[in-house]
Image 1 (cartoon, rainbow, N blue to C red):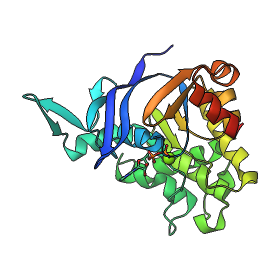
Image 2: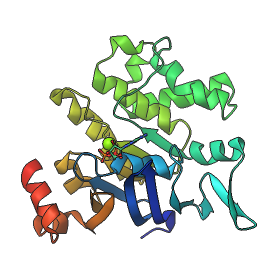
Image 3: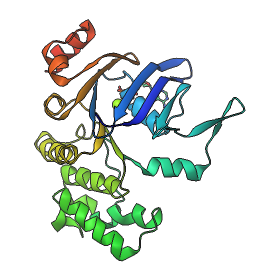
Length: 254
Ligand code: ADP
Ligand code: MG
């Protein structure tokens, strides 16, 4: 197994009095595909959002390449990292959401190259080359000049994946990337994700697509009530789940 890229230690997150994450320990290694499953409200999105500090942990910490994300200890006190440093950390973690959030007034290509130009300061022609290469990689070379409204949901989500890849991230975080799609469009997005995994991308994927979890996941995490109740290789989680809650969940979704 590759070296650890993300190390999550004793992670807790509360919203007011609601404790959503109740102590998560998880290490994600280079090249690993970790699939997170579990019922709605179990804290899966919050876990992903804590990884890139879209949510600030209430306790515990997330290390990315050995460095704490978003904050650091100074004289025994946690202080936020300067915005610029946090941006640099986030730039190396691509995130894809259920809703694609493309800029509607920009073409597919413009959506993909916006951040490389603005954040990575790539010259436009280099960014365009990169953007076209990435659109080709997600099967949309012929849609570069198209506006999002003229693309299907599956195509828009593939543009969103290309946009995330344009920052050349070390890890990709997916939060139910196919949940908002019509069923016939799910497969093309999962295929792109599978290709990425085959290319060695480190991925954390929250999904209800059990076929994907089984075939592409190196490890499956089952969450419930803000805790990891069970984790293991897909064969074990799907073949012989040990925790009664895992069994109950799988009996409903499979
Ligand atoms: P999942 O992704 O597994 O469905 P979430 O992480 O989205 O679960 O949510 C877990 C719980 O935290 C839910 O009860 C949800 O309502 C609550 N929650 C999530 N985000 C917030 C927030 N920003 N403020 C208050 N409650 C939240
Ligand atoms: Mg969620």
